[in-house]
Length: 193
Image (cartoon, rainbow, N blue to C red):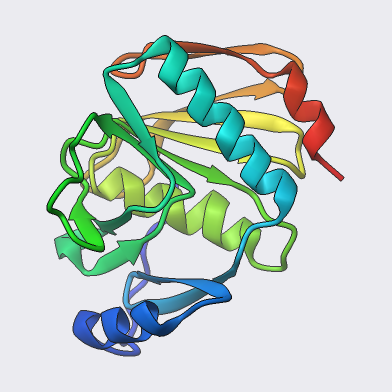
């Protein structure tokens, strides 16, 4: 669990939202008062997300796995994150605009990228922010480690998650309630470098 350090914000949320709407070749996020830049995903990254969308549609047709919705996360709603995907009831994000409250989201998903700050972003900052927001599950598909890490029991006071369970590619992972999906991860071995 990472403790959030005190620091000065680079900009306010409204300034960030203006910059993010103009970006085309990168994804912008605003986590804990800092501007974060993430390159647009590669083909294997997108293929993994599409695989997960199909799995979710088959197992839970009452939920949508949305790969574009931005979320308001972090203490006091001062953060903006664009998960690789967010799982929520069908139609949940209708009328929410670019940045939705995290309430009602049952799982966020990140797939690691092959860039220098994926460790900090996907393994440290994102779980802290999603835990603060009270999102029940955070699924990290870690291509460097060849594993899925399921984070449960969000800590809304300190950030992060109290429980982590790791399953290496090729194994079967159960995403507990409120998701309730079992994934066979053998195919993910094909989408790592």
